[in-house]
Amino acid sequence: SGLENPAVLDAIAHDVTTDEVMLAMYELRPWTDPDLQLFQLQEKLNAYVSFALDGEMAEAYPSYVGKKMRIQLRTRHEPHDKVLEFASLVREQLAFQNMIFEVILMEDEGCDAPGGCGCSH
Image 1 (cartoon, rainbow, N blue to C red):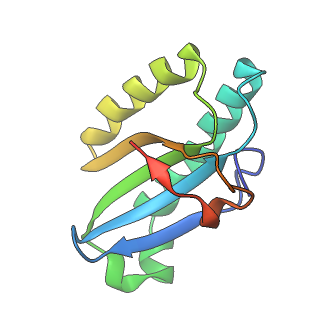
Image 2 (cartoon, rainbow, N blue to C red; image 1 turned 90 degrees about the vertical axis):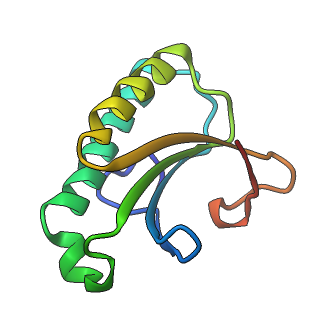
C-alpha cells in the first residue's frame, strides 16, 4: 500500500455522518524525494479517480453510487511545497467532478500502521 503502489486502494469507507465515500492513500515516508513521490502521488490519484468514475467502485460497492467522494492523502510528514501546489490544483479540478481532495497530516505518536493513526487537520 502507500504511494509506492498505485494498484492498491489503501482505504475506503462510508462516513454515515456526512454520507460521503472516503478513499484514503497513505504516505508514511518523509518527503525527501519530492519529484519521485509527486509522480507516485499522481499515479495513485489517477487510479483512485478512475476507480471512482469508471464504474469499478459502482461494481464493487453499489451502495456508494451517487454519494459525494472525498479523496485523502494521509501523510505522517509535512509535504514538500511541490506536493502542496499539486494538491491545490487537484482540489480545483476534482471539484468539477463533485469530489473533494485533501491532505491530512497524521499524528506521529505510536503511528506504525496507517489504520492506527489519528489525524489532525
